[in-house]
Every structure is written in C-alpha cells, then in structure tokens.
Image (cartoon, rainbow, N blue to C red):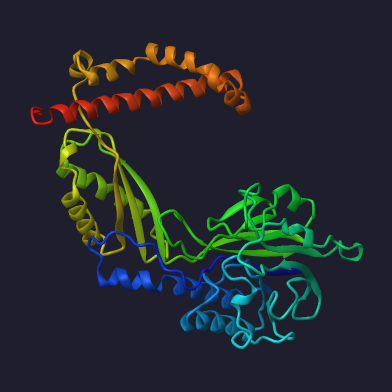
Length: 432
C-alpha cells in the first residue's frame, strides 16, 4: 500500500527578521523582508494542495509566541482550512514557542471529528492516532506529544508508547519537538538519537532545530520554512515522503524560502588595489547567482568575510562598505544584498622588513618559525595530553593535527606582526 505525507516544522509565524545594515535598504527589499514568512508558508500550502499527501505533520513552534496578533492567527487558520477543505489530514504538535495555551480554542475551533488535530487542543497532550487513507485503509500510526509550557526539562520519550503486537505491520511515526543536539543540558525535551531508534518507529518527524538535519535514515529535523537571521544560512523548506509497503521510497526536501542567508569568504591577497576588490567581489557573486538560476528565492542576503594580507588595508572603511553594498544591489537588481561585511584582512608588510625588525613586530614574526612553535608545543603538550587522549588520534591523525595547528599558529603570528608593524609605522609606509 502506498501513501505520502509532508513533514514541516518551526514556521514561527509572527517572528520578525533580525535587523541588517541600512546601506541601500530600499522599499523593494523591505517588502520582500516583511512578507517572506507568510509567502514561504503559502508555498508550502500550494505544494500540499498540488501533491495531495494523505497527511501533514507539523512538529511544533508554528507560532513564535504564546500571544499572537490577528494577522498571525489568520495566516495559520486560513492555511489549515484550505488543507482540510481538500481532504488533507493535519497533525500539529505544540512546541516551546507555542505551547498548548498559545492556541485559543475559540479561534482554532476544530472539533474532534475534524481533519485538523492540534495535539493538546482537540486531543490529549500525548495521543496515538491511527491514520487511514481515503478508502479507510489503515496506513500509519502517529505518536505525538505537545508542550504544555515553554520548556520541558524531562525526557519526553517516557510518554511515547511502544509498538503493539497487532500493529507491527503498520508504519509508525513519532512526532516530537525535542533537542537531541544538546541533550545533556537542555530545557527543550532532551533525548538521544539512540533512544529514538529503540522505539523502532519507521520515521521520527522532529522539530526545534532550524537547519534541516538527517540524523539517521528515519530521524529528521525538517528545519524552518524560512531562515530569519544570518546564522540560519542555506536552503530552508520541508520534507515530502512517499511510502510503499512500509518502506520509504522517496524522501525529498522541498525548498520554500523567499529569502536566503549565505556566508561568503573572499581572499583579497592577490588583489592589486582597492578598486579591483570590487571586481573580485562582484565576479564571485555572479558565479554564485548563476548556480542559483533554478532557485525561487527572491532575495539573497550575503554576509561577506574579507580575508588576506593586503596593501590597501587602511582604505577599507565605512564608506567602502556603503559603496560596495549599493553597487552590488544595483548590478543584481536587488536580488543580492550585502547584509554585512566582516573585515578580517591584515596589512601586507614586506617579510624582510619584519624579519629584520628589532622591535616587538620582529619578535612576533620570528616566533612564527616552525622550530619555535615546535618548542612551545612540546612544552605545552603535557598540559593538554588529556584532551589529545580524549580525541583518540591515530599516529597519522595526530601528525596531521600538529601540522594544521602549526600552520594556524604561524598564520596568526604573521598576521599579528603585520598589524603591529603597520600600526606603529603606518604614516611612513609607502607601497609601490
């Protein structure tokens, strides 16, 4: 028997986006910014109406707050009504942002016979549901738990039922908002992946983590529909799953984001001058957008990280950031917007000058010699031998670890020497 379902989570209707810088922040960008969450939710609704899954699982944090404005309530209520009108069952659990008391029973007045099940509102806080298809054939059992408060320090799995003997031939799903990433110290239903596996469910539909994560072949965080801040980088969306004879035959991630946050690093070490840096940045962004031609995103918010030792170090300033942002917005027709520029460049000083300098910068530079680093490493080795032992390195891995550590230390010391020398002598430095 074949059926399909959608796994979605952490919509956070009503959450504002993190603020970004004001350079070139025009009305077009502002409009996309303000409506992205609702549009991403509507993309999910439209896909559902087209794909016609047998049911939908919503793994908590549908709202961002216990108290919602009218618009937020309307967005969710209208979406759920569309799904029910088209015969699609929905099982929604409450998370830490939207515990049971976040759902006003007068607004979300779905009775016990409705296709919409808000766990804890028109069912018990923990409930097992037998799901049937349109021909009334049993296709799945859903085990679902809602938060009653905005935290849950206890292990939530104590509420979940094991598979009954007469249901072993049925597809079982756990629907849970939980933290298996930091389970030793969490107030958000802490549990471990191994504990989930022990239930032998066919699929765990998890919520709480905003990045889509596959923990196992049957344990998934679907992530949020729409990233809200620069930390939530990459594609966001939901999962569409097809099952045949209790075996998952398709598990597809469907993008829904309107805005996408990305981090981009650009090394300017080989860049001739500050005007050429603009070409380097725009070329890299152009290559990026060419790889996104099939994306439905309306706006990419890029956080630039500038790296390298450069001669035009002291020319990178607020006016530079503003000009770069405005130029990028214009040439990409507001499709790409620089949300932030993190300058991690260092001044470029002739190595012979640093090597022969008799001041502090020379001392720092000469310390970067491998022999000096090796001596310091050997002295410190005993102090962190427990850490090294805990890492359980093989001899080859330990050798690689030392090599990489040396390189990082050397690079940091040389950069520090460059900066110290530059700040002490910047009025006298002349680049040819």
